[in-house]
Image (cartoon, rainbow, N blue to C red; front, side, top):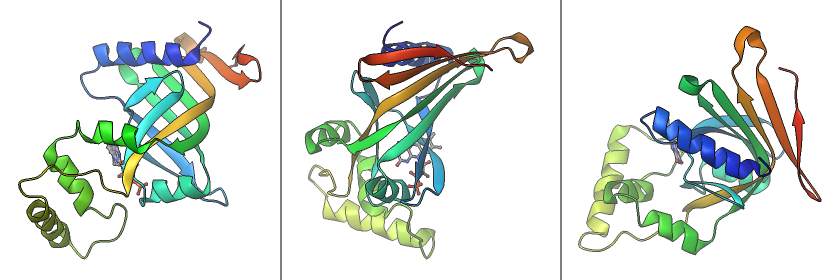
Length: 190
Ligand SMILES: Cc1cc2nc3c(=O)[nH]c(=O)nc-3n(C[C@H](O)[C@H](O)[C@H](O)COP(=O)(O)O)c2cc1C
């Protein structure tokens, strides 16, 4: 396979067929001075440019990529004995792209995005419930618009590694590294 994004797309399809839940990935970002943090997000798109996820731009991950636009992500399928590791640069998707995804979200998720100052401390669950009630009233009878603080990010991979379980810990590891002339493929020791 010449194109690792195509291969990743195939693995995601095979994962979806094997495991009955949505695609998710562990996403690692880091502060400007390189302190990492990680969390799970949904992998919402993949094409020849990279992979996309959506979140609140003022969340911890949003703030981290604003100051340090690099990320790593891991997808793991127990059932298939597979892992993919992705590294790359991160940029915001356009408002049109964010809006196109936003409009597919259930209304409850849209109201929750407006209500939640993601990653900020809350005085209690009541505060969140109150904010949801406020947003429900604010947007009553109307479409819930894309919040200015919410949207997508695209990871443009510079390296993608495909790991496959093999017996006796002799796993296969195939890494693709993007160079000036395209992808270079190498096999790594397990
Ligand atoms: C299966 C799963 C999927 C998730 N998907 C997303 C997502 O797509 N976007 C998002 O902002 N948070 C998602 N979350 C919540 C994040 O893991 C995290 O709690 C939140 O984004 C705040 O992270 P931060 O404080 O590091 O920014 C998901 C959590 C789980 C367990």
